[in-house]
Amino acid sequence: MKIKWNWGTKLTIAIILFMSFILALVYLTTKNSIILVEKDYYPQGLKYQQRIEKIKNARKFRDSLKIKIDKRNVKLMISGVKPDSGNVVFYRPDQEKEEDRVFNFDSGKQIKYSYPLKYFRKGIYVLKITWWDEWKGYYLEEKIFINK
Image (cartoon, rainbow, N blue to C red; front, top):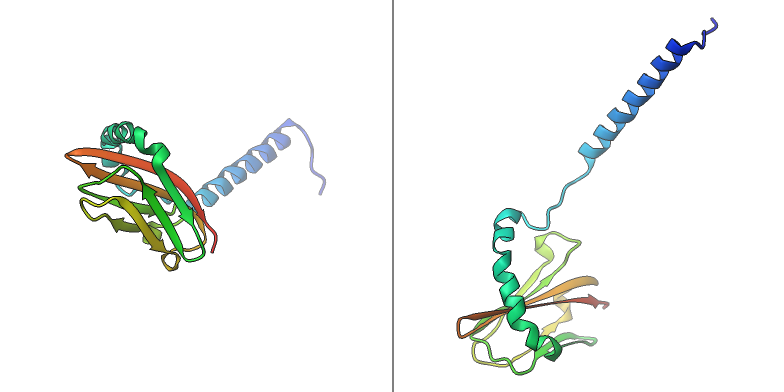
């Protein structure tokens, strides 16, 4: 059987190929997993203005932030700060929430802490430091790479 290659045959083949391409794309997109950075991203977006205020408050402490990674510890120090309360979050962008590490500050002491490397895996972390001093909030963020 010999196929006649007129415009109708070519159009039918083109439509079949196009539909196959679209179906393949739909199949591949349904197999792709969607991982959100935050599960509750909308309320987090509404609170972002508060974070912007904390970032503005912490600008003067940006240069005093010192992070040192040695063979056993991640050392963090911010000179000139004695917070009422606060926390340090080691956020792992390429993993789920289970990989994040959260450490709280003691009140009234200078921010000078050491965190053992046994709590961390090799990779990039975003260090998120939040503290409050006399009802005023502060927020600093720094990227670090842990290579143990």
